[in-house]
Image (cartoon, rainbow, N blue to C red; front, side, top):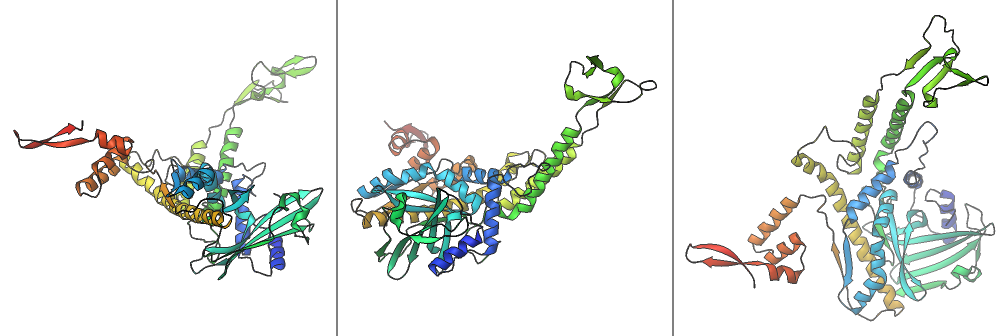
Length: 462
């Protein structure tokens, strides 16, 4: 893919001119998405020979994705169709789910788009720079959009636009191909058959009666402060770009402090050895000695340069910036910063984790909605092309958030549910010990009344 960027407004205008429809991407969102993408790829505009990067953007996206998908399991069940869909397609998505979630955290979202791959169902992960929304419903959900694909061959650009339109009739999918136009334009419309990779595509198809789009847009669940009217999501680090810039600068100051404070010896040229007319450094690090052309008659031959480092002040300042970044990104303090001096007890650490827990829970809810919509799209494709046997389906999700929650508190809560009759005792054992339902029921102790003492004792099931 080449020549397509979310911030390329000229490319957006070219799409609008061809389709005669407005693309719902404002100039503010275009600029913001371009910047988020550059930061994620460690290409911040403020990077230079003097300003190094901490690569905080990718660290934030990676950490949130890791916490949201750690030990995450999901499957489709309920019928033979569901089982085949799960085995052939859905589990492939689950294998890539952490990477997709990280990209969504970095750039505000990602699209899951079902398609036909050699007469079998597959899912394409479309980054936001190739996703151009056209219409939304009353809830702000994107229901019509254009997907762009571009390649360069023999010095010429080829672009394919795949338009998905949802209206009262159903879903209409159109494929349009273009050649030329340079880096920013579409060029002249051509037949799909003129490009080898696209010749098998149908120019247009309508799925009548459909009420939901084929694609599923996984949108990061943070409020859009760049353009509140936009249907697009925002990056996890969208609210702290200035702080990320300042943190990089502070980090660069710290590196310069270490470099400038290196131990050195200013030595008179008379103190250095001569070898074939050239000065020779002593058999130590070459950068330890610096030759000075001074009169050695009334001064020492050597003068040690060993300034006191101010690294603690720089480190404290950097740490405060990292704390502010964590707050704005919804991360627990200590994820990026050093909290050794701020929180020491288990209770304090538990409270600090709550911010991450809330953020990750919201991301998981959004991911769950997106995956359900994806399965709806796969089911629709399977019915239209008669790929799988008929049958219903259910999507099951299991998010293990034990790494962010207090296991002792979880046990106490589940134990109360057992006492209230809401949860079975074998369910508590299965969760706590990781046993299957059969194992938990078999190994579960049973209550037996001790008539001699009048109390209850435990006896294992035989």
